[in-house]
Image (cartoon, rainbow, N blue to C red; front, side, top):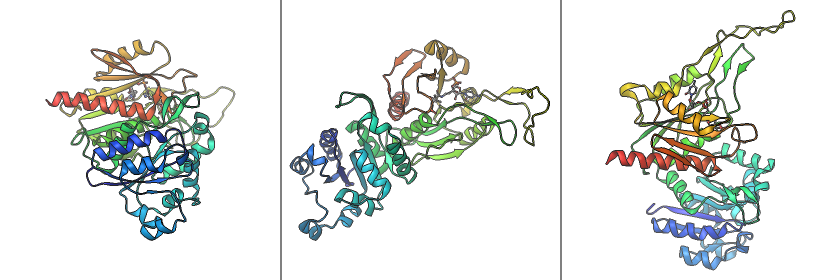
Length: 402
Ligand code: PMT
């Protein structure tokens, strides 16, 4: 990050203390950091500590005569390579989503055309509130990047998603945005599948499942952050395309297989999509009508297995093929059987039973199954699962390089 200029906006939240560590890590990597501190943020960290760590003036006031004469707020936002909001409170995310500019931080964020990364941190109920979800969805649609939050014990005594990402995770996200292609997976190509497939029955009906694409998209984003040239093949989902990733949007399992094969050769394949095992044997050209009393019979045929096909792709087989196993009982045992049956190298098992919240949720509890054993990972955000899996893949490929 040598020579990169970051504008760090510290908003109000107990996680502001981690921003001090974040500044240290960024400066160790050669980045120059300037800070904007909101009134809320100043309740948790002082301008003096930020100034001491950045060796720069800290900007707090919108209507400050001296600040405006030395460096106006427009210039402040434009002189950076990246704006980082850490912690990003529910309040500042709401202001960003709705274009409010009532203090220096929100004004800078509205005045900028520089990329923005947010590291949300808030109470779990604030994070889960439909208003915050909608604000975030809007920001992500507009291209705002996000790292975290993680799941865990919170300062308020509750448990759940809402903890700010750790400084190292934020540094990795910054590095992925500022220096794409410079990470541990630079020079590697990855194919990732995500989301459900829709298998048409007639022009208005289809067979599908509850996958949202959150897990697969998080993995693609994490691999790209480590520098892999990543191709995401996704079924229908409302998840935004991850930054820095080539994306093929497909509908059916057969389309997904074709797009994956077209994306080869690759070093890494991660199949996180919930591919429909079966499709209707024939697709009716017109809407199937109710006729008589008996419902129509639906004849099913098996879909191609993308994971098994990539695992058996001969000299086009990726060096590391990782599957997922979505199970509702005996999760690890069934996943181990799938590892053998599909011919992949690793399998990531997760519980999708009713009440697990895995489908569509923000968190996941997975077991990484390899030939030599099983690693049980604690419950964490899907983004954190993506980062940890990407790091494990990089470790593995580093080992196979030497
Ligand atoms: O999308 P989210 O809401 O975030 O939820 C994430 C998830 C639960 C979908 C994800 O974590 C997950 O478990 N994905 C795999 C879902 C699945 O289809 O599992 P499976 O056990 O039925 O299939 C095993 C493996 O074979 C998977 O890697 C799957 O992608 C692959 N497969 C299955 C059938 C098929 N025809 N082709 C395949 O490639």
